[in-house]
Image 1: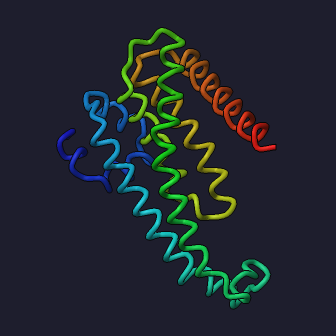
Image 2 (image 1 turned 120 degrees about the vertical axis):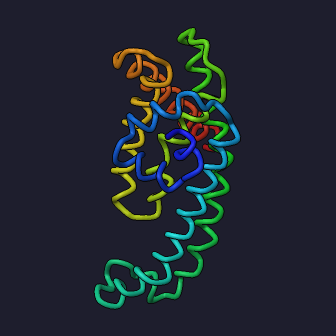
Length: 189
């Protein structure tokens, strides 16, 4: 079953939404960085294609019938959204390694003997819902919360820790990322 899961990215996507705990159970033995990065690229490309569909088909239809929802289409600004989604995908790819590194540092702070590839895998698979649906207004907030819940489940399953320890690790991660963002804002001011 693991070989089938390893070869079928669409099945992984389905399991992230339907059976995440079983997905994390099956992925526990595969610690390769390459597979995680390839899955991340697959999800990013799929998200970019969905955003193109959204920009070229869904939003023009909605702006025609309900123009106050997407007023930028009357101004002809819809084509400028495509490069921004592409740039966002590139930034997400770079941030994949940065945020996985922060998660790895949190593992080290809690004296967990895990390697970087596990942190990368946890980050990739837990952030998949957000990456996939980041272009949909208001839904992306729900996917951020779901991604954080997935990250808690993934840390619990991969690291074989209690739910309490997983919550502690993930909220420490969240605090460190928030501090990093606030520091960037402070430096820019």
